[in-house]
Length: 178
Figure 1: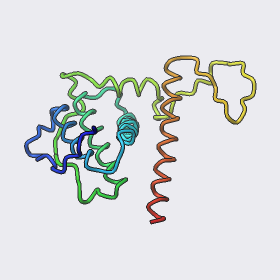
Figure 2: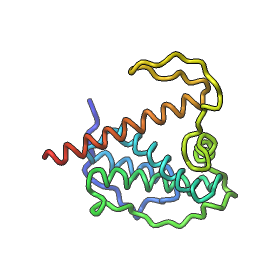
Figure 3: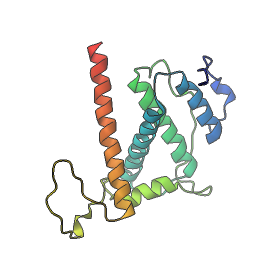
């Protein structure tokens, strides 16, 4: 039997926003009350990582504080979901925390570093066309075969982004049709 959805929202003042487990617990409890799937939350997290990484990279950063990065990914996930549900005004991010992105004494974000390594300074995905490949022309339903693990990750990420954009557009059209 599936667990019932809880109707009570946790008290955000009793949650330590700097504790990732506590913060995620609060977010999960709030998200369980919304008409969204765990897949949508994962897509929002992927998009949040991309948006934040692109922003930080655009500011010339290649390493940031791990806590700063994860906190701001969570803020972005929250805002993406609330904006999608048109609830941003009613459900703002509950905390205001100031973290120094440049304080690397507690460790750097490996997620951001990997993103920077797989993207150029412009934030665009590294073009692997400098490596010559002999490929037959692809049909409409075929995709190129990745040559490296990093390229496979990039291709998967791009496919998820395209699917997310299509899902967002479908959601917007459904909202308009109502």
